Length: 494
Length: 91
Image 1: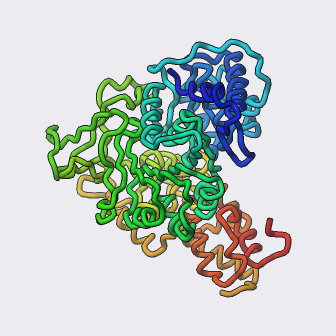
Image 2: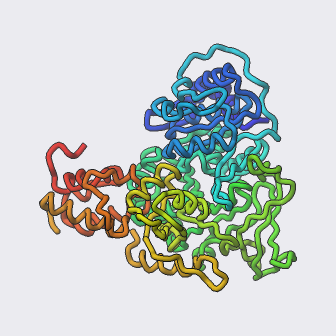
Image 3: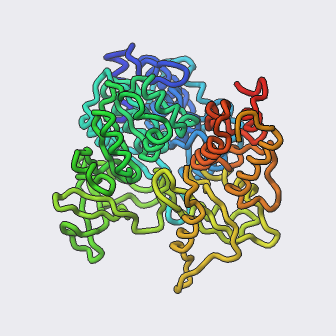
């Protein structure tokens, strides 16, 4: 079975039901199916076929959803790039995955002129073109790749997490069952399509013949707008990272009005959720509060439904137990299984695991997450932190070396170190820079960054220093820099 | 500061805050009142919230500040125009 089958099935059984709502209004399953078919035919006519990669670069819209479907219907693999990403990022990722084609919003096509993609750069508007009824390739199978999500890589280059139809379906099937998705549900899609939880919003809804409201990128961090749309669009299942929910509570006035009765489930993932805001949510709504956990490489592999006892803790809710049929192991440094109270690295095996990183050998065993967890007496797992230098900034996983590499490619920057100060909503990605002879201005550095990195990876704070501090073994003293960054932000959080 | 701030003075206040907070003081004087704050990477999602917070604190009591959202933070000049209530500047 392929991930795109759900929309085709719903288009047959409930063609007039609303599949997607965006700023332009509702789109039915029949229309979504038609648009995806039109674009799939266009892709196939240009030679895109099974296993080919197609980069998608456009702001969120029903047409972009149709494009993900179209790529899958052509038997190919979609590679979503954030709608606000610069053209240089799109080119770099298209090159990394040897993309056969790019589908871009119509106005952005010229920015990719000369891109060496055999099937070219297609305007997204082709989804509104005619359906000719030409043949499409046979549907992909469980083991075929469905999409590639690029995450920060430890080498300083982004890594393409390649997910099969089978892994995505295991994740989506579990989520739809756990939430009890049904045709009258309205899922909010807050996550960008480059983030794995967007697959839950879209496909758990499609599987149930429900509808999805797409939260536009330019409203995704506006807490007032989010609170307004949660009410106005009659959302019944909400997912976002905790820092967004926190902002909705703190600044958007979420809990100042009675909770909508339709809201049945609030899902969150990607970072620890401060318990005081979970308490506020629990006091406000009777909706289920579900804490999901999983690196991109594993999809969601653990979850926990928040219960009264969790609200009495002084730390975030546990990440819980295995989800989606996955198997979780917690291994101490000596390789032995961690017992109750002990901390170890979380290792995941099971049906939701990625195929591997694009361009690297396939994954041939369990995935070591690099996340440290504690085994609680009742067998639930608590998230403790990261083993390596990976940073978590407001739900984005950021490898500092990747940002540092871009900073150091600016002619005015000799050395760079990137750390994260604070946590949750207040987390600030902070860059310390040693200027090269001749120097550089912070504004010039910011312009350099914003042209090369997705929005979540551009540092919030920039400070020039004469030297980067080193620890005894000569490595950059990141703990010292983090402490300095925290002093800089102290008392100035939003 | 209360309602009806002077536009030139408002620009100065905004420029000083942005330089200090987001540009490490901007010793080279790169920032202009018309520099695009979002397109040039100054306003990350966190920085937008920090700037909005500053506006609410600094211009408390101004009617205009209550209506400003992250989408209005285009550049210093247009923020100052909104705060000072220039006719036609509000969409």
